[in-house]
Amino acid sequence: AQRVTQPEKLLSVFKGAPVELKCNYSYSGSPELFWYVQYSRQRLQLLLRHISRESIKGFTADLNKGETSFHLKKPFAQEEDSAMYYCALSGRGGNTPLVFGKGTRLSVIA
Amino acid sequence: DTEVTQTPKHLVMGMTNKKSLKCEQHMGHRAMYWYKQKAKKPPELMFVYSYEKLSINESVPSRFSPECPNSSLLNLHLHALQPEDSALYLCASSQEEGLQAFLYGYTFGSGTRLTVV
Image (cartoon, rainbow over all chains, first blue to last red; front, side, top):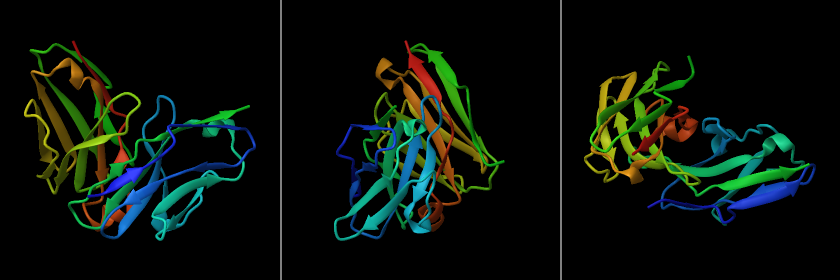
């Protein structure tokens, strides 16, 4: 069974400081990892997907298969980054739909 | 159209009522999903439809009854709910199950906030 662990419920950083949101996963097959973001009163949005290796809004995430981690990073936090961030995992097979971690609330302090 | 549209946005219902939640997408996605999200919790999968057939039911109580009348529409019929069923119900879609979902992730609707009184 797949499992996603986000150890921090809340992370507070000052504006301009670096941010790292931790995500670890457990999955027996080949996983695909995603980061979703949920701003206040807005819908859940896809932020990043591992396979595309993209950088969105200054965020990046690297898959570390040895440590089974997919941490989200940004060098300089902005106030508008304050939101709920969910790490999620799906598998290549049809019976492994998207499963979310418990989420980390990022609060960027001016 | 690159959105998943859910109606209504808010719903208050009594424990003896019957109501339905509606979800629509016109992106040609062939997999659609219902998730339940309680306050300050992550979304939890309820049902998966693939090519209009139910492929996954995560042991959801029978008072929740999904329906997929066509490839663009997904309904969730509600009957005899309990107050603990109050939550945000999210619909999502992906190009299909398996590889496409694997590659591109899901598109989520804004949800229906359900309150059972």
